[in-house]
Length: 296
View 1 (tube, rainbow, N blue to C red):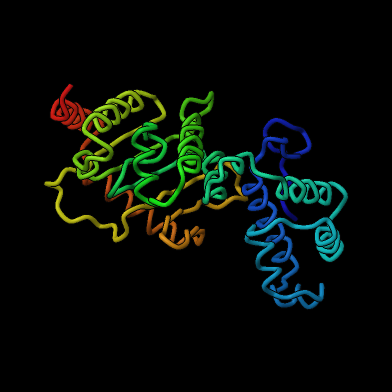
View 2: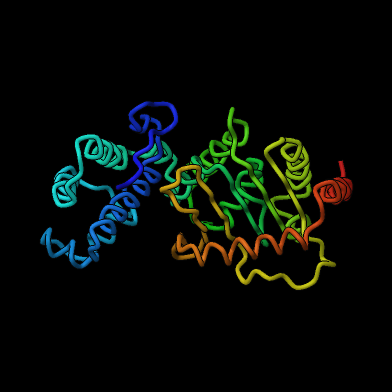
Protein backbone atom coordinates (compact mmCIF):
# COMPACT_ATOMS: atom_id res chain seq x y z
CA UNK A 1 0.00 0.00 0.00
CA UNK A 2 0.92 3.65 -0.24
CA UNK A 3 3.06 5.39 2.32
CA UNK A 4 0.69 7.96 3.81
CA UNK A 5 3.35 9.82 5.74
CA UNK A 6 2.31 12.96 7.66
CA UNK A 7 3.20 16.28 6.15
CA UNK A 8 5.33 18.76 8.04
CA UNK A 9 3.30 20.85 10.46
CA UNK A 10 0.64 18.26 11.28
CA UNK A 11 0.28 14.73 12.59
CA UNK A 12 -2.47 13.76 10.18
CA UNK A 13 -0.95 14.83 6.91
CA UNK A 14 -3.78 17.29 6.21
CA UNK A 15 -2.57 20.31 4.24
CA UNK A 16 -2.80 23.74 5.81
CA UNK A 17 -5.17 26.44 4.59
CA UNK A 18 -2.39 28.41 2.91
CA UNK A 19 -1.39 25.46 0.75
CA UNK A 20 -1.17 25.94 -2.99
CA UNK A 21 -4.24 24.52 -4.78
CA UNK A 22 -2.08 23.57 -7.78
CA UNK A 23 0.35 21.61 -5.61
CA UNK A 24 -2.47 19.86 -3.77
CA UNK A 25 -4.01 18.84 -7.10
CA UNK A 26 -0.63 17.45 -8.15
CA UNK A 27 -0.36 15.48 -4.90
CA UNK A 28 -3.88 14.17 -5.21
CA UNK A 29 -3.38 13.17 -8.82
CA UNK A 30 -0.16 11.32 -8.01
CA UNK A 31 -1.84 9.42 -5.16
CA UNK A 32 -4.79 8.47 -7.34
CA UNK A 33 -2.41 7.27 -10.03
CA UNK A 34 -0.54 5.10 -7.50
CA UNK A 35 -3.80 3.67 -6.17
CA UNK A 36 -4.81 2.71 -9.72
CA UNK A 37 -1.39 1.20 -10.39
CA UNK A 38 -1.59 -0.88 -7.21
CA UNK A 39 -4.80 -2.39 -8.55
CA UNK A 40 -3.10 -3.15 -11.82
CA UNK A 41 -5.74 -1.23 -13.76
CA UNK A 42 -5.33 1.01 -16.80
CA UNK A 43 -6.91 4.43 -17.18
CA UNK A 44 -9.45 2.95 -19.57
CA UNK A 45 -10.38 0.23 -17.09
CA UNK A 46 -10.98 2.77 -14.31
CA UNK A 47 -13.02 4.93 -16.68
CA UNK A 48 -15.17 1.94 -17.60
CA UNK A 49 -15.76 1.00 -13.95
CA UNK A 50 -16.73 4.59 -13.08
CA UNK A 51 -18.68 5.09 -16.33
CA UNK A 52 -16.75 8.25 -17.19
CA UNK A 53 -14.41 9.16 -20.04
CA UNK A 54 -10.77 8.09 -20.04
CA UNK A 55 -9.77 11.72 -20.59
CA UNK A 56 -11.48 12.67 -17.32
CA UNK A 57 -9.53 10.07 -15.37
CA UNK A 58 -6.31 11.31 -16.99
CA UNK A 59 -7.08 14.93 -16.08
CA UNK A 60 -7.74 13.95 -12.47
CA UNK A 61 -4.43 12.08 -12.27
CA UNK A 62 -2.42 14.95 -13.77
CA UNK A 63 -3.92 17.61 -11.50
CA UNK A 64 -5.22 19.72 -14.36
CA UNK A 65 -8.52 20.39 -12.64
CA UNK A 66 -10.17 20.29 -9.24
CA UNK A 67 -11.97 17.12 -8.20
CA UNK A 68 -15.52 17.17 -6.90
CA UNK A 69 -16.46 15.39 -3.68
CA UNK A 70 -18.64 12.95 -5.60
CA UNK A 71 -15.70 11.91 -7.80
CA UNK A 72 -13.49 11.41 -4.74
CA UNK A 73 -16.11 9.23 -3.07
CA UNK A 74 -16.44 7.12 -6.21
CA UNK A 75 -12.67 6.71 -6.54
CA UNK A 76 -12.25 5.86 -2.85
CA UNK A 77 -15.00 3.25 -3.08
CA UNK A 78 -13.47 1.81 -6.25
CA UNK A 79 -9.96 1.55 -4.78
CA UNK A 80 -11.17 0.42 -1.36
CA UNK A 81 -9.16 2.95 0.65
CA UNK A 82 -9.42 3.08 4.44
CA UNK A 83 -10.85 5.93 6.53
CA UNK A 84 -7.56 7.77 7.00
CA UNK A 85 -6.68 7.58 3.31
CA UNK A 86 -10.18 8.72 2.35
CA UNK A 87 -9.92 11.73 4.66
CA UNK A 88 -6.53 12.66 3.21
CA UNK A 89 -7.76 12.43 -0.39
CA UNK A 90 -10.92 14.39 0.43
CA UNK A 91 -8.95 17.19 2.06
CA UNK A 92 -6.50 17.38 -0.83
CA UNK A 93 -9.47 17.69 -3.18
CA UNK A 94 -10.99 20.44 -1.05
CA UNK A 95 -7.82 22.53 -1.01
CA UNK A 96 -7.29 21.85 -4.72
CA UNK A 97 -10.60 23.55 -5.48
CA UNK A 98 -9.83 26.67 -3.49
CA UNK A 99 -9.28 30.04 -5.06
CA UNK A 100 -5.55 30.71 -5.41
CA UNK A 101 -4.32 33.74 -3.46
CA UNK A 102 -2.69 35.03 -6.66
CA UNK A 103 -5.95 35.33 -8.61
CA UNK A 104 -6.64 38.96 -7.56
CA UNK A 105 -3.52 39.96 -9.51
CA UNK A 106 -5.05 38.67 -12.73
CA UNK A 107 -1.90 36.81 -13.66
CA UNK A 108 -2.22 34.61 -16.77
CA UNK A 109 0.14 32.06 -15.23
CA UNK A 110 -1.48 31.46 -11.84
CA UNK A 111 -0.67 27.74 -11.96
CA UNK A 112 3.01 28.51 -12.42
CA UNK A 113 3.04 31.02 -9.55
CA UNK A 114 1.41 28.48 -7.23
CA UNK A 115 4.08 25.91 -8.13
CA UNK A 116 6.84 28.50 -7.74
CA UNK A 117 5.58 29.42 -4.27
CA UNK A 118 6.09 25.86 -2.99
CA UNK A 119 9.26 24.93 -4.84
CA UNK A 120 12.39 24.26 -2.80
CA UNK A 121 14.60 24.88 -5.82
CA UNK A 122 14.15 27.13 -8.87
CA UNK A 123 16.52 27.04 -11.85
CA UNK A 124 15.83 29.95 -14.22
CA UNK A 125 17.41 30.39 -17.65
CA UNK A 126 16.73 33.46 -19.75
CA UNK A 127 18.12 34.66 -23.05
CA UNK A 128 16.09 37.83 -23.53
CA UNK A 129 15.10 39.44 -20.21
CA UNK A 130 15.89 39.43 -16.51
CA UNK A 131 14.24 36.70 -14.42
CA UNK A 132 10.89 37.87 -13.08
CA UNK A 133 11.95 37.29 -9.47
CA UNK A 134 14.83 39.74 -9.92
CA UNK A 135 13.13 42.57 -11.82
CA UNK A 136 12.63 46.09 -10.47
CA UNK A 137 9.15 47.64 -10.82
CA UNK A 138 10.30 49.98 -13.60
CA UNK A 139 11.97 47.17 -15.54
CA UNK A 140 8.94 44.91 -15.08
CA UNK A 141 6.61 47.69 -16.22
CA UNK A 142 8.59 48.14 -19.43
CA UNK A 143 8.55 44.38 -20.08
CA UNK A 144 4.80 44.12 -19.51
CA UNK A 145 4.08 47.08 -21.77
CA UNK A 146 6.26 45.64 -24.52
CA UNK A 147 4.54 42.25 -24.32
CA UNK A 148 0.99 43.62 -24.66
CA UNK A 149 0.99 47.29 -25.75
CA UNK A 150 -2.83 47.48 -25.73
CA UNK A 151 -3.16 46.90 -22.00
CA UNK A 152 -4.55 49.84 -20.04
CA UNK A 153 -2.45 51.28 -17.17
CA UNK A 154 -4.59 49.55 -14.53
CA UNK A 155 -3.87 46.11 -15.97
CA UNK A 156 -0.16 46.89 -16.34
CA UNK A 157 -0.04 47.96 -12.68
CA UNK A 158 -1.86 44.79 -11.64
CA UNK A 159 0.65 42.60 -13.45
CA UNK A 160 3.66 44.49 -12.07
CA UNK A 161 2.25 44.35 -8.54
CA UNK A 162 1.83 40.61 -8.92
CA UNK A 163 5.44 40.24 -10.02
CA UNK A 164 6.66 42.27 -7.05
CA UNK A 165 4.53 40.19 -4.67
CA UNK A 166 6.12 37.01 -6.04
CA UNK A 167 9.58 38.34 -5.18
CA UNK A 168 8.85 38.21 -1.46
CA UNK A 169 9.51 34.49 -1.82
CA UNK A 170 13.26 35.17 -1.95
CA UNK A 171 13.13 37.09 1.33
CA UNK A 172 10.96 34.62 3.25
CA UNK A 173 12.08 32.70 6.32
CA UNK A 174 12.64 29.55 4.28
CA UNK A 175 13.33 30.69 0.72
CA UNK A 176 13.90 28.27 -2.14
CA UNK A 177 17.35 27.94 -3.65
CA UNK A 178 17.10 30.25 -6.65
CA UNK A 179 19.70 29.78 -9.37
CA UNK A 180 19.55 32.04 -12.41
CA UNK A 181 21.61 31.87 -15.58
CA UNK A 182 21.20 34.76 -18.04
CA UNK A 183 22.90 35.63 -21.28
CA UNK A 184 25.19 38.68 -21.34
CA UNK A 185 22.82 40.30 -23.83
CA UNK A 186 20.36 40.78 -20.97
CA UNK A 187 22.80 43.23 -19.38
CA UNK A 188 23.20 45.20 -22.62
CA UNK A 189 19.60 45.35 -23.80
CA UNK A 190 18.23 48.73 -22.67
CA UNK A 191 14.78 48.07 -21.24
CA UNK A 192 12.98 51.28 -20.31
CA UNK A 193 15.95 53.63 -20.21
CA UNK A 194 19.61 53.71 -19.10
CA UNK A 195 18.42 54.87 -15.67
CA UNK A 196 16.04 51.91 -15.43
CA UNK A 197 18.84 49.56 -16.42
CA UNK A 198 21.23 51.00 -13.88
CA UNK A 199 18.69 50.49 -11.10
CA UNK A 200 17.99 46.99 -12.39
CA UNK A 201 21.64 45.99 -12.32
CA UNK A 202 22.06 47.45 -8.85
CA UNK A 203 19.11 45.29 -7.85
CA UNK A 204 20.88 42.23 -9.22
CA UNK A 205 23.92 42.88 -7.04
CA UNK A 206 21.69 43.32 -4.00
CA UNK A 207 19.73 40.11 -4.49
CA UNK A 208 22.87 38.16 -5.45
CA UNK A 209 24.09 38.71 -1.88
CA UNK A 210 21.26 36.57 -0.52
CA UNK A 211 22.59 33.16 0.61
CA UNK A 212 19.80 31.35 -1.25
CA UNK A 213 20.45 33.09 -4.58
CA UNK A 214 23.07 32.20 -7.19
CA UNK A 215 23.39 34.37 -10.28
CA UNK A 216 25.56 33.62 -13.30
CA UNK A 217 25.96 35.42 -16.63
CA UNK A 218 27.02 33.65 -19.82
CA UNK A 219 29.58 35.90 -21.56
CA UNK A 220 29.52 36.43 -25.31
CA UNK A 221 32.82 34.58 -25.55
CA UNK A 222 31.16 31.33 -24.42
CA UNK A 223 30.03 30.70 -27.98
CA UNK A 224 26.91 28.85 -29.11
CA UNK A 225 24.36 27.95 -26.45
CA UNK A 226 22.82 24.48 -26.06
CA UNK A 227 19.29 25.71 -25.31
CA UNK A 228 17.04 26.04 -28.32
CA UNK A 229 14.39 28.07 -26.52
CA UNK A 230 14.84 31.49 -24.97
CA UNK A 231 13.38 30.75 -21.55
CA UNK A 232 12.73 27.81 -19.27
CA UNK A 233 12.43 27.31 -15.52
CA UNK A 234 12.91 24.08 -13.57
CA UNK A 235 10.93 23.73 -10.33
CA UNK A 236 11.72 21.07 -7.73
CA UNK A 237 9.60 20.16 -4.71
CA UNK A 238 10.03 18.57 -1.31
CA UNK A 239 6.90 16.42 -1.58
CA UNK A 240 7.81 12.98 -2.92
CA UNK A 241 4.43 12.75 -4.67
CA UNK A 242 4.97 15.97 -6.64
CA UNK A 243 7.21 15.58 -9.66
CA UNK A 244 9.73 18.18 -10.79
CA UNK A 245 8.34 20.52 -13.44
CA UNK A 246 9.87 22.38 -16.39
CA UNK A 247 7.92 25.54 -17.20
CA UNK A 248 8.18 26.95 -20.73
CA UNK A 249 6.44 30.25 -21.36
CA UNK A 250 5.01 30.60 -24.86
CA UNK A 251 3.31 33.33 -26.88
CA UNK A 252 0.00 31.48 -27.17
CA UNK A 253 0.23 28.86 -24.42
CA UNK A 254 2.53 27.69 -21.66
CA UNK A 255 3.94 24.20 -21.27
CA UNK A 256 4.47 22.21 -18.08
CA UNK A 257 6.76 19.24 -18.66
CA UNK A 258 6.61 16.56 -15.96
CA UNK A 259 7.89 13.48 -17.74
CA UNK A 260 11.11 12.48 -15.91
CA UNK A 261 13.01 11.97 -19.16
CA UNK A 262 12.05 15.41 -20.48
CA UNK A 263 12.88 17.04 -17.15
CA UNK A 264 16.30 15.38 -17.17
CA UNK A 265 17.03 16.81 -20.64
CA UNK A 266 16.40 20.31 -19.33
CA UNK A 267 18.35 19.66 -16.14
CA UNK A 268 21.33 18.45 -18.20
CA UNK A 269 21.03 21.54 -20.41
CA UNK A 270 20.96 23.80 -17.38
CA UNK A 271 24.10 22.14 -16.03
CA UNK A 272 25.78 22.81 -19.38
CA UNK A 273 24.71 26.45 -19.24
CA UNK A 274 26.22 26.74 -15.76
CA UNK A 275 29.47 25.35 -17.13
CA UNK A 276 29.46 28.01 -19.88
CA UNK A 277 28.59 30.84 -17.51
CA UNK A 278 30.92 32.97 -15.45
CA UNK A 279 31.26 32.11 -11.77
CA UNK A 280 29.19 34.23 -9.34
CA UNK A 281 32.12 36.50 -8.39
CA UNK A 282 33.03 37.10 -12.03
CA UNK A 283 29.35 37.70 -12.76
CA UNK A 284 29.25 40.40 -10.11
CA UNK A 285 32.24 42.08 -11.77
CA UNK A 286 30.49 42.01 -15.14
CA UNK A 287 27.38 43.58 -13.65
CA UNK A 288 29.37 46.23 -11.77
CA UNK A 289 31.15 47.16 -15.00
CA UNK A 290 27.82 47.56 -16.83
CA UNK A 291 26.50 49.79 -14.02
CA UNK A 292 29.38 52.18 -14.66
CA UNK A 293 28.61 52.19 -18.38
CA UNK A 294 25.01 53.20 -17.74
CA UNK A 295 26.27 56.25 -15.84
CA UNK A 296 25.09 57.98 -12.71
